[in-house]
Image (cartoon, rainbow, N blue to C red; front, side, top):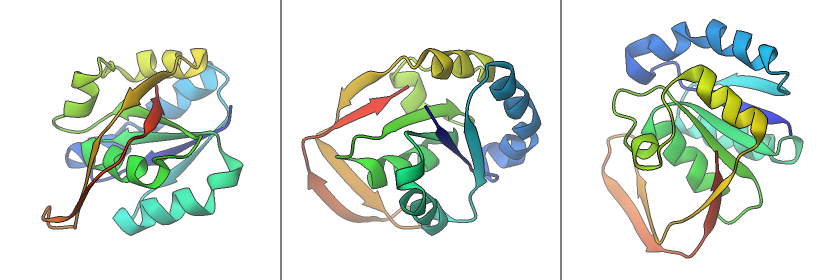
Length: 145
């Protein structure tokens, strides 16, 4: 399965971009078919997903909770897979879903295509200043690595 990895260079005070080389070494080691997109903004994340929607099966966050949030908002209700290689300072979503914070373990999970279906009832949209701008309830299933 082809994966678009969305790297947030600002995550974890820049440590995510510093980890790019290690990530690419591991992706190659496990023979994964991928492309890395370095995001420039939240709008850029949305645009990258929409413009690559037909080219990829998996959309993987390489950043923090915010990066994953924007990916999930675009892909909610689609048949695409959402993945997470947690690189934020908090990684609350990854912790709550028992996703490892080790890059190699995440690559192993991606290689095995181990998918969990999750259910989310409340979706919240925040602007760039973390102010709630929209809230709605929706039944959906998000495949997540």
